[in-house]
Length: 452
Image (cartoon, rainbow, N blue to C red):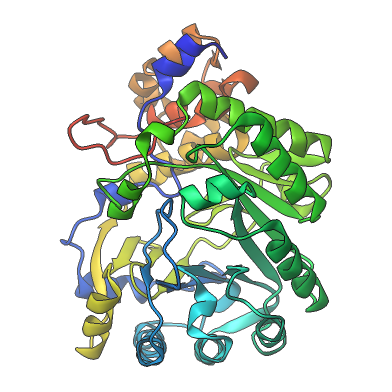
């Protein structure tokens, strides 16, 4: 891809982990609607669960998650109690006792509150949900703050069977530039302890676009990560949005790579992962050839949610904790953002509802279109419109928005079939934006990361 194409399409577009995206959420959706929507949960199969722990011992300057520095045990104890109260209150609105297919712990650093408190929350979830025998229980871990003893507790008492470690980059200069210093030896020791604890599904995150990254050095980091033999890897692009996360202002913008350099960093790591027999999954995930995720992608069964690409087929996600977003049959609900506001809302005796958005029939159609493009890089619009009982001609105007991508040999169209070509893979979000009714770029109010 030449630099002129790069510059042309290096625009700000959603990551499309949901549709409508969080930008469309409003406070018009409150507790009453939240309670009503919870009553519809569980009628269409098993659900997935998410718990957000918004605390870290040290703040990483690149982080785009809702987190804060927290070290006080009293705060952790109170937060744990209140998450348990929230689970009780949400469950009281359910009309059935749902089965749970998966639990994902995110943050922040979930283990910051301690494995014992995590186990208490897990017990509360089991009190209200029937876990499937093969339920995936995944935890994001920070190798700087997790011990071998903690890992034993998580796997034995909580049933954790999948973990993810944020590596980002092994280069010491880059680590210092983003305030996340964790030598390779520390990560390797954590991986060793995880394997000893019985973890057989390990993911490592790498991140390109960080300050002071260089192509060859980033390739070396990818090689080191591959050498730890994770089952999955992710290769995320750093989104520099200091107007949304003030701590990103601590990163020197002059040290950030430009769009062409970002693409070179991505391709360098991509070559190393391909050479190690990792299959490219979707936009930024990688999995060993023949894995469940690889097979799901080839068979058109891959899905995308707030955690990225997944084989989880649950249509409902019940999320607990500060800023957590639930995917319910009738729409999306987000909890109050800060830990302080979240805890006050639960102490006041209600749900922690902050905002949300209800789904229209058009939203459901376009959500499916965007998800299939993000997962399969191709779609038969006529077939998907038939499933939704909508005339495919209603998407004619959206198809016209693909014309620039077609002219630049990034996308092909045959009738109502759309195909994102390999050279356009990194720009698939631009193709998705053509079918996004709400996306209207505003240079004065940027709300999304760049496409590259």
